[in-house]
Amino acid sequence: MSGVKIPASNQTDENSRALRVWVAGNAVLDITPVFPASAADRNDFRDELVPGRLIPMNGVDIHAGGACCNTGAALRFYGFDVEISAGIGCDAFGDILSGLIQKCGLSGNLTRMEGANTSYTVVLAPPNTDRIFLHDPGAGDYFDSSHVPEIPAESPALFHFGYPPLMRKMYEKTGEETVRLFRRFSSHGIPTSLDMAMVSGDSPAASVDWTAIFKRLLPFVDYFLPSLEEICFFIDPNRYHQWKKRCGENGNIPEDLSISEDIAPLAEQLLTLGAGVVVVKCGAYGIYYRTADKKRLTETAKRIGRSADELCDQAGFVRAFRADHLVSANGAGDAAVAGFLAGILRGHSLEESVRLGAASGACSVGGYDAVGSLLPIRALMEKIRDGWPPGREIRA
Image 1 (cartoon, helix red, strand yellow):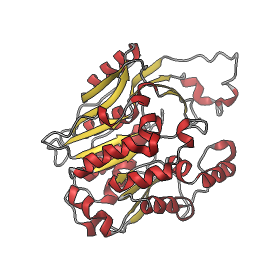
Image 2 (cartoon, rainbow, N blue to C red):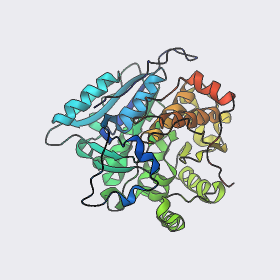
Image 3 (cartoon, helix red, strand yellow):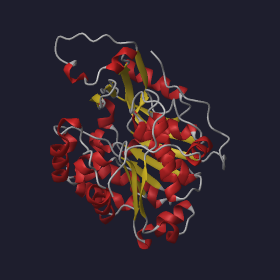
Image 4 (cartoon, one colour):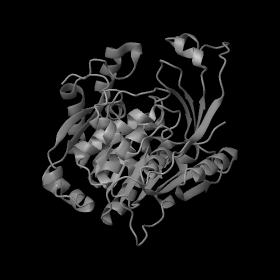
């Protein structure tokens, strides 16, 4: 068993004064069985994962996961003081997760939820196969805005929340608790960001009207950072099912993905619903970004010390970077979020920040957790300048 492998905190980056970031939401004990090296020679594990079959393994990686631990630990590595707010159970998994979070150097509030088990995910990550998640939301279903303390006199530089679809109280009643939380931080002039999570079609969260939730919530969200698959599933299910037909058993995102036909319309819909800056993570393809008009971004710009003219009416696509080593994509999206937010908070331009997000995600896949393979921001920038090879191509 191994814990979170946190590299030494990166205190040598430019503007290294430690800003404080508050990360709230989903906290999970991630359990990843390690496949033996010989398994890399197999192309498809679907034929292996059948009843009655014994598959030999080579140990297990256990680490703190979920948005709080992945994004929080990555931001800490990038030089920020990170405080988290999450719920865990009164059980052995809760004891393990609490200890791992302390090893990450994350401070904050872990609320023990009476009568609830700790949220956990068994991550099956066979070589050459997309991940399979066995997830129990546990204590996450009981977390609400009351578990995030009132804002102290010394306000954080950013408030980030992750994975409301995996937290029942945060999406029921048209997202009332999530809206309340974001309104609180927004009213104090604190920049806000939001990340999502994918759910299965039979999950209770799948039957919720997410468009109605976003209509209430996104006006208080400065940076919205969902994955392409997640946001299509939640706000355009017809398009999502068309994608499923196009790609068959090969995944949920078509290989002939188009920026103008598949991605831009979803981002435009999110801006219409009230988001300030939309950053859509597109996996091995890269990251698409689009911003609202000057009127919508005036307050956002004020919160981060920029001009609205600098932020408004932008759109672009940054291709992914080719991973030097691929172990698991688990947590790579959270690492990409942290790289992007680190760029924004350190004063980089929007496009530069998106590029740092893509670079952070490409590094993250080199380990079983989100942060063990990260490089300092300065090293990421040097690697990009030196001609880091891009990932998969995408149609305009």
